[in-house]
Amino acid sequence: MRPTFFTVPNIITLFRIFLAPIIVVLLISPLRVSAFVTVAVFLIAAGSDWLDGRIARRYNQITALGTLLDPIADKILVMGALISLVSLRKVPAWIVVALVARDIAVSGIRQMGAVKGDVIPSSRLAKCKTAMEMGAVVLAILSIDVQWIDPAVFPNLKVSLLALLLALLLTLWSAGSYLSRLLANAQTKGTDDQHPPAAAR
Image (cartoon, rainbow, N blue to C red; front, side, top):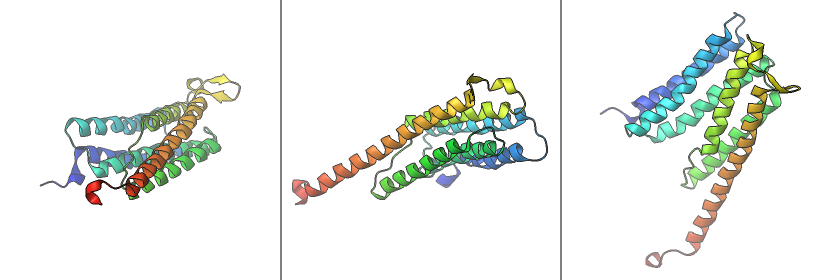
């Protein structure tokens, strides 16, 4: 029997992790690589996120490992690209620091939930945040070669920066929802412990 690790969705997720450092190299390499090539690789990696989820749901190949790896692969892909864009002065460093801090905080919240037996899946807000980040990354990369692709909507506020600011708002909102769920579940569990079922008394 094939181990559950070697499911098609898990292999696709690992492929996304494999592509992340390649994108970083394409961005910061001293060799001149077309921004369109880098974006093509990034879009393949981003598209694999949709593909592995669809296959996992359709063929009932959702595994605990896949649930763990999928958001990690997204974070490695997006944060690797954003940090590289900071070095190219295409993205403000403070936004990336805030996004990384949020991801660390949420990982801690989800870990605390897992320890207490409450597995907290990624929320829709978190998925929207990741989509906003990916869109901002695509615009920022393309603007390396074609400036008009990432126009300014206000002075010193480009479309990619606006997308990142919206992602940051979603980031704070989703982090709050994770924390709220953890506290609510902890309170419910505490109440159940104080009032066990009659059969258990």
